[in-house]
Image (tube, rainbow, N blue to C red; front, side):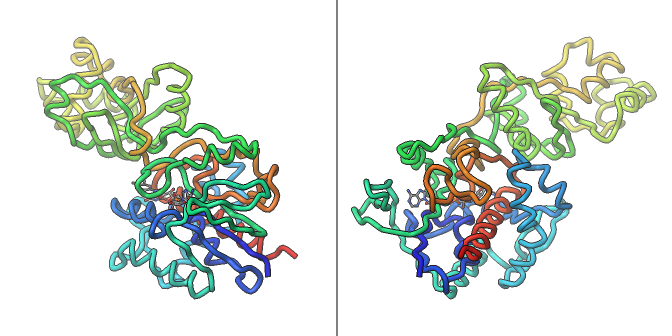
Length: 395
Ligand SMILES: Cc1cc2nc3c(=O)[nH]c(=O)nc-3n(C[C@H](O)[C@H](O)[C@H](O)COP(=O)(O)OP(=O)(O)OC[C@H]3O[C@@H](n4cnc5c(N)ncnc54)[C@H](O)[C@@H]3O)c2cc1C
């Protein structure tokens, strides 16, 4: 029987271990922490989005590069994942935002335990406190406790480089460079971005949400919500633009994002509402005719000139297009996910390293991007499932 070693115990690894044929492979997961799935549990703290309910083509379009993820999601889609979870006694429901959650009576730890229970029943062994530290001269796996493990097939599922406390610290990147594998430097994704708020504004509006807005940058538009923080802006709308904002920041330029406070109305409609109002004070007009709250109005004041605020047509344009300069991205360790990792050019269509045969790489440690909202876990689970299927079919 062939020996299959899985390094790292996050969602990508767990799905692989759940689906691998243990009549064909003797499988062990080596996890550096004393438990598997620690980042999965952190994800569960703010509402665990397991996947996103949309058509396959809409799903694929959320990923970058979508050509890379398309065959992976076609093999194991959001519908497949929902069915898989159901089959493993993890019923789900679709929230109002189309995000897919475990049923309300199931805590994230219970979801994780059910998956781990299934893996153990499948005959996969798990070793904890086992940190992989590289390869020796013979190409065997080396661990921190000096153990050397000889294996037929290795699958790395080491995660990205945020929330180091969960074990996903990106330290593995130097180890891959020793095998001449190109690793793209990590950057924060799905993270907060810095905005220079005026002192008056942030004192009053820190922690306030901006709901039902749209945000645009570089031809991309993201609908959703934002939260004002001392540092700047957070929330799903800005997370969705994080890849493009980071690219601009990396080029040394200041990205200007545009906030649309009335995404369901045109500039002309906004302007008409302002002009036709019987009210006299602009602040009253914005509140009662356009339903803008104090925070939205304060943003308009901070980012527009005084004359704009008193002229209906100019103000309507700004309400639909508030320019906000982004100074920097937040600390990588606080980010939901990271950009960077193993260069996709380094793997073949089965996610095998081209330069190191019999070694596969899955999950967030590869250089792909998806917004938060269930897409990240879906991508990781799909890679684990697809690889299990391929390995099970190997002669
Ligand atoms: C706050 C937060 C909220 C999130 N919310 C969501 C959400 O709602 N929906 C969603 O889709 N995604 C969410 N995510 C993202 C999601 O959790 C990750 O994308 C996913 O966990 C990545 O899975 P993975 O299997 O690639 O790696 P990880 O889950 O990062 O697991 C990698 C594992 O490898 C181990 N490891 C690392 N190095 C070594 C080594 N040298 N030796 C042995 N083991 C090692 C680590 O200890 C870790 O257990 C969230 C993330 C965060 C931080």
